[in-house]
Amino acid sequence: MATVNIDIGKGRLLVNKNKDFEFSFKIDKPITEVSDTWYKEYIYSSKESTENGYESFIDFNLDDYIRVDSFDEDMDDELKVNGLIKLGYKYKVDFINTNGSVLQTVKDYQDKFIYIAINETITIPISLITTSVNSYKVKVSVVTENEKEFSNEKEVILYNEKPTIIATIDAGKLHYKIDDSEGDLIKYQIKLNGRRIYPADEEYTAFQKPLSNNLLIKSTDMIVNKLNTIIINVQDNWGETNQFIYTFMGEYTGLLFVDDKNKYYSNNVGDILEKLDFGKILAGTRSYMKYIYIYNNCGQDIKDLSVCINKSNFPKELIIHYGFDLENIMDDREQLHKKLLKDKEKVKLYIQVELGLEFKYSDFTFEIDTQATPVNE
Image 1 (cartoon, rainbow, N blue to C red):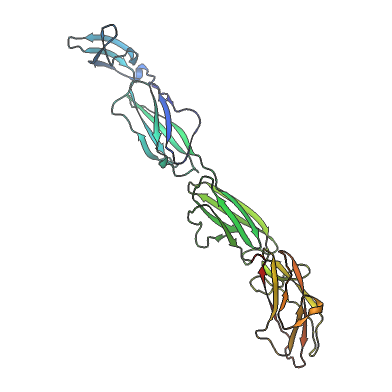
Image 2 (image 1 turned 120 degrees about the horizontal axis):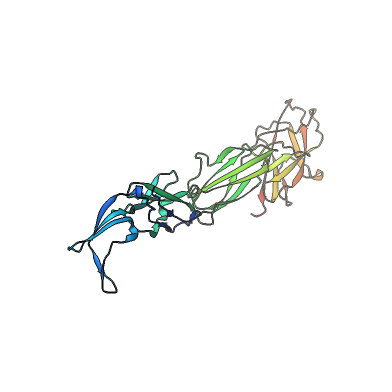
């Protein structure tokens, strides 16, 4: 049985972006047995002169035959050879897609059979490669004169660096940077505790240039006082992916009211979580002095902290005394804390309630508004 050696070299072929690549291969003459071929008369007519002045037939080569039975050179300058000739072959080169289908025939079968070994290098367009995630193949196929088929394949991989991701969370704000050392376009998504929070309407963003960005994490999306997990999934336009996982303790952000144990009285969207209870107060008297802390969780240092009582729907016969120290307790007027309040620090606010003799409510809730100026402004 005939055999054909197709040498495509060892290992895989690693190629670079934006540059056509070369593929080299060798095909030896088929190893032919008597049963593979047939007895036939071959005629040679073309001659060439040799160095010693004789002429020889150009195409005749005894090595092309398994067995020669007779020669007959007639008067018409033709050489007739009867015998068993070794098999010829044709070959082609296909570029195979990641799904196994032929993406392009780079070189097709020849019109005539070849009877010699070949050593060839061909150029393959890099434009045929669109992903680095799965490998392609170059396939050399050979069909012999007796219609036997042989092939060999080489794996082709596009060299591609993964995108890089850096991210941190501070005061409820996610700061992230997505880069690609090769300048590829990227698309990405952000998930919080398994739920996608960006983009809102699509699975991924559109492909875009690498970027740095910030994303505010809403307190309503996180689990406060417990570990939360942020996952950033990134894919470049060649299909290469990377993932960044970051865990953080969920917390409210902004200016917050807390107690001695840092338990929140309200969140950063105005929802009341716990009330400051002044107990029973008789009309015409004052309550005991209470205090709360204003906690700076804005992610930056602040100054000129302003505090005032929200008097919308405020009843008559109710007076609120408050201040940042016991010597300067004021009633119903804005209080200003001019000192620097660093990020993650808190300041004590004293509060006392006074009821008039005609105060009619058995239960009443009031709100305190705060605002401040960032130090860097």
